[in-house]
Length: 172
Image 1 (tube, rainbow, N blue to C red):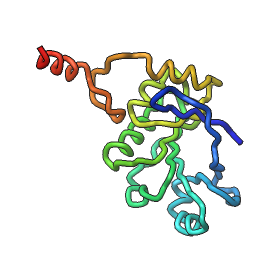
Image 2 (image 1 turned 30 degrees about the vertical axis):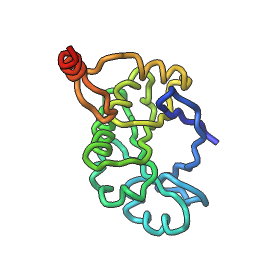
Image 3 (image 1 turned 180 degrees about the vertical axis):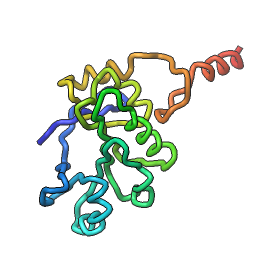
Image 4 (image 1 turned 60 degrees about the horizontal axis):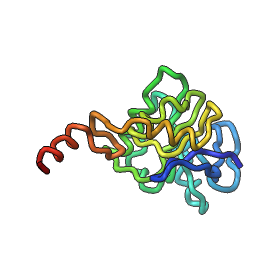
């Protein structure tokens, strides 16, 4: 079973991937699956009715808004980082968390899921990573927690430094 990295409040850990990612030209196996947006829109209802969890992966350029009404029953949305320079998955993760209040797993997948971007991925709402660089959970946790202060509000709920300063001033 493939291993993924899940960030937790106390660090990070290896987790087994209970989902099988299925391409559009493959037959759907038994068990929990992650399928493309196109396939989900065509077959998602039937697949989910077979007592299985059905997740969706989005390629860069596919809008998460297409899943808006189905999000409460989708356990995982996998967002693809196809190229290092392509940041659209960051936007989609933030939309999932902030606009749609998605509480399920937001997974970073693809050849450009790199530890150097862990801080930004976590701030946007990602919580599980299929690390493309061979790094360990400990390395991801260290990178994700590298900076003590943040300068703007984001999906991770961390208090920005200006709010910390305001609290300190009021406490005087």
